[in-house]
Each structure stands twice: as structure tokens, then as C-alpha cells.
Amino acid sequence: MIDTARPTRPLPTPSGDGRPRSPVPPAESLADAARRRRRAGRRRSATTDLLGILAWVSAAVAVTLWLAAPGSHTVVGIGGWLTDAGIVAGLVATDLVLVMLVLAARVPLVDRTFGQDNAIAVHRSLGKPVLYLLVAHGALLTLGYGASAGTGPIAETIALFSTPDMPLAFLGLGLFVAVVVSSLVAVRRRLPYEAWHVIHLLSYAAVGVALPHMLSVGSVLAQGTWQRVYWIALYVLALGLIAVYRFAMPIVVTLRHRIRVVGVERIAPGVVSIHLAGSDLDRLGAAGGQYGVWRFWTAKTWWHAHPVSFSAVPGRGRARITVRDLGAGSGRLGRITPGAFVSLGGPYGLFTSRARTAPYLALVASGIGITPVRSLLEDADLRPGEATLLLRGTDADQQYLWHETSALAESTGSVLYTMVGHRARSRESWMTEQDVERGVTLRSVFPRLLESDLYVCGPRAWSDLVVREARLAGVPEHQIHQERFES
Image (tube, rainbow, N blue to C red; front, side):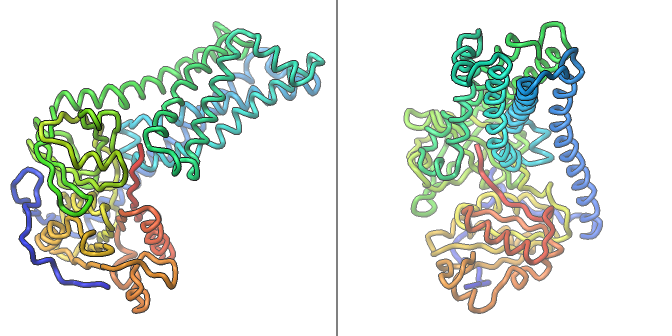
């Protein structure tokens, strides 16, 4: 049930650097702050729209350059139509594959305007359409070449395998099929994270082995044409962004800050806070609510990267993350010994005050989802009464960091509610049975819900129910912020 009582046990120091953080009330009024945030939100939205337009324009330019090439529209018979349709499908599919790689490259511009979690969601949504286009590309070309030559599909496939670089193209298609199939929800749930991650890395190999046949087979990308220049530029851009931001920048950040584990603190059954020390960690630029991709260099953990939120805003020499044992990989983190070297990619994410557009702030957290909410509250610049929090847990063992969050709420003048108990069984709900029977809703917990930015973090199925209720209550989409951790 909802309970306004605050925990009474002694509070640990809330700041990640060992110093109390006293919020400084903003000089501007809530209305002025909301107008400023809306302007920033419109700029982010415009940038997001522009990036989306550029992605589709890049595919349109690829097709246009092909249509403008000499002989591209000389279509002879059904074989010509099938061949040309296959070429267009291949051009669009290849362009979208490169867009997918850029979305997964952790480019700062994409993260600041769109959010890395949203970028990965779009990346995944493109997987099936791209696969269908690639399959159509291969099938239409095989049928088109066969119709023009008067041979059947099987004979034409055998002939294509004897063409230089074409076996690599078939290998690339096979690798991409494996990547897409492994990403299906039903399949991914059955795969260990490590196996899924290795399979997913095959997407880079798929792009690499498919490139030679684009440059050597047929006249679509003939040497000396603008098409060839355009595609090489796209490949250099996409692979260059991956090389810089997915691989090089984490190495630079790791070497610059020299992060090591200084302590592992058990805060609940299966949950530990990992205390980290390093050089100038405040210069990471981490905002409250962001996460990093962490790799702990011990014999049992070096091969697994973990996307984990900061559970306190990093100070000059200290940082902290809080991890729940959700499997073999995360379970090993609780047994790391002090002194272990740590590499970091990030910080990432738009689950921060930067994404706000409304005058008020509503925060809902369940389980280990408290970590980004706690650091967001620590980092926020709030007036008394501006923020309202609801912390959700099944029982006392799931009240991670509630004491710290309670202290932060009190120091910022925020309203704090807790809801403890198992989820309702009478209907699908994110609340307890007792609160469902009492008629509790998001609107009753957050009276200014429609004037608030709603931040939700917790188990995916649970947080989806909170977001669904918010949408039904009329909260605009741009005011809903749901954290997702993706690799």
C-alpha cells in the first residue's frame, strides 16, 4: 500500500564523492524553467527529425544515383524488371544496414538528442525490414538473371556461386539472418547474454564481407562513377563512427580516468554497490540518470560488459554503481575484489533532467530501477514541491537505496511515497492488490501528472504498465521517459 512514512535507519552519505550535496534552488520560476525546457525540447525534436530525414534521404540518393546512371532504366522483359527491383531492394537494404550501425555506434549527437536506448530500439526495429529487403534482393536478382538467361533458379544460384565475390555476399546474408533471428525476443530469452553478444557482433562481419561484391559484380558501382564514391563515403562514415565511438573513445576514457574498484558493499540480498575511484571522475560529464557500459578486468568478468546506471553522481575521485544479481554475469560482480581495473564506455542516456519539458517532475521506480532515479534526483535543481516520487518494492528486501533517496527527497522539498507488496492478481497492474482495490491511480499519486515529466524505471513488464496508464491518462508522449538498458 502507499505509505508516506520515511525510513528511520541512519542515512549513508548521499553524494558519490563523500560530500553532502545541498540543492541550490533555481532563480527562475517553474513557468520560466518549463518554457526554457520546452525550447530545448523543440530543438532536440527538430534535430531528431533531421537525423531521421537524413537517413531516408541517404537511401533515396542511392536509388536516384542508380537511376541517373547510363543504362539503368533500359528494362528488357520480365528478367529486366526483376533484376532492377532486386537492385533497388539491395541498395535500400544496404543503406539501412549502415544506418543501423550508426544507431548502435553510441554517437554523442544521437545520444544527446534521441537517447541511446531509443536509438537501439530503432536499430532493432529496422532488423526485420532490412532482412526482408536483403532476401528480396537475392531472390529477385536470381530470378531476374535466370529469366534473362533462360535458366532456372537453381542453375542460376549455382552460377552465382561461381562468380567472384558472390560467395562472400551469400555469407554476409547468412550472417545477417543469424543476427536478426538471435535478436527475436523468443530466441534471445533462451540465449546467454554472452552468446547473443557474440552473434550480434557478426553484423560487422556481415557488412564487411558483403562489400566486395558491391564493388566488383555488375555495373551498379562501376569504377569512376558517382555511385561508387557515394557508397564508399557512406561506408567510411558508418564504420568510422563505430571505430571512434564504440571502440576508441571507451579506451580513451578508461586510460584518462584510471578507474579501479575500491569496495563492494552488500546492500540487500543479491544487490551490491560497487565503489569506484579514479582520476577526475567529475569530468566524465555524467548527469544524474545516465549509465555507463562497464567492464571489470578480472579473470571471471573481463569478457562481459555491463550497462549499469550510476547510483550516485560521480565526484572528483569517486563514483558508484549499484548492481542486482540478474544472472551469472552480474552475479560475479558481487565477488569482485578491491583493486580490480575497470574500463568504461559512456556515460550514455537521456534519462536526465535535460529531457524535461514540463513544470513538474514525477519519478516512479521499482527494484534496481531506483539507481538512475536516485542519481537524477541528486543532480536535479528543484524547488520545494516540484518533484514527487513513488518507490515500489515487493518487500523489505527490495527497498534498495530508499534511505538515501528519502534523504534527497527531504533535502529538495520533494514529496515521497512508497508502495510495498506483491503485484495485484485480480487484474494486470503495476500496483499492489490493496491499492488497486482502493482505486489508486497515477493521477491520485501525482495530482499534477499532466503537467509533469514522468520518469519510469524498473522491470520492463512492470514499467510498461506504468507507461500504459500514463498514456491513457493523457500524458503527452514527449513527457514520458522510460529507461531501457541496451548494449
